[in-house]
Length: 125
Image 1 (cartoon, rainbow, N blue to C red):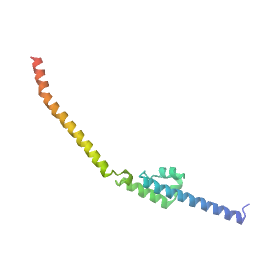
Image 2 (tube, rainbow, N blue to C red):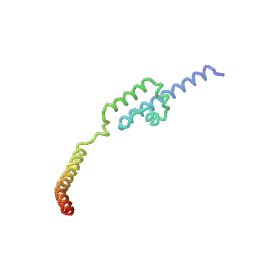
Image 3 (cartoon, one colour):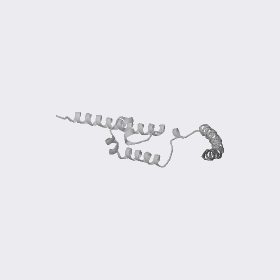
Image 4 (cartoon, one colour):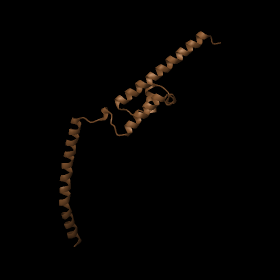
């Protein structure tokens, strides 16, 4: 039988568990977003060790996950995924080097085409 004291204790434990679960989910959402990882129901559930169904049932948490998912779909790149200025400069230099190599290769191939046609004509006669 439940006594008023045991019912109050059970209620207090349940409330503490819900509060703890909520804190874990909110912390997981913040950390995933801060790290630049996709914020999805599955990723939040795994990071917070909570069920996805619980996340779906909590309107404010569900709204925050949906908001962050939509933001990622809008092309907003998290700061950890953005390239630094130095990185962009190195990429540019590498691309310019590759372009020079390809231009030289194209020049050589263009010079070889008339020779190849000449050799083909000479062997056909």
